[in-house]
Amino acid sequence: MALLGLNKEGHLCPKGAAGAEDVQPVRDVLLLVDTSGSMAGDKIIQAKQGAVDFARSANVRGCATALAIFGERAAMVCDPTTQTVVFENKIRSLSVGIVGGTTNLAAGLELAGKFSQLNAVVVVTDGQPDSQEAALRAAQSLKLRRIDILCIGTDDADRSFLAQLATRSDLAIHVDSQNLRASIAQASHLLLGNGR
Image (cartoon, rainbow, N blue to C red; front, side, top):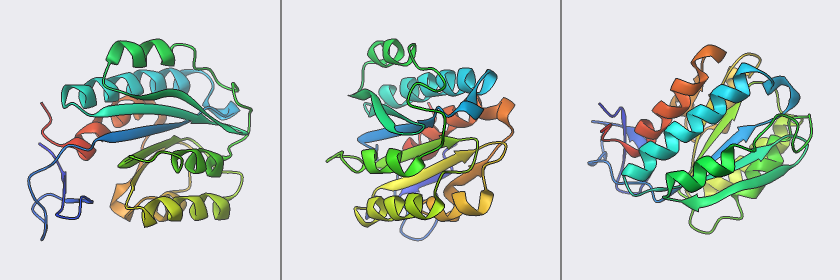
């Protein structure tokens, strides 16, 4: 059962809330995954598997999923696609430290801002960004364009910061690292609804 829907303005809101409509598909979603050094081991494996699960779920609904990563800098891994095989092939090469070992979340959000048709960003991180202020400024630019931001944090991720970063505090999720894959996969249901 979907917990969130899109209101008349196309923004996420709790289903059944005033102004909520039947969920309409989100056209383009960007998964923005932390590949800093602290994501080594099981966390990056779970993040990759969760990203594939997310893309499969989104693609069934006809929505395109893109993938970008951030460390010291940000980089695109996969442009928006509805072809799961293309997405899976791109994500195989993903590894910790590929774009540096620090956590420059602002660079990732600034990269997201280069999309012209983006509807939502799902941020996956396990720690503190290099600069909370820069990340919040970059997030605000996306919000002004009516792009929803959903945050999934584990371990040392600051819950208060994630709540500020997300479009709304209820779109900031803090999970145990062993539940990262499932949480990323479930984000597709939160954003896209109709959990078929």
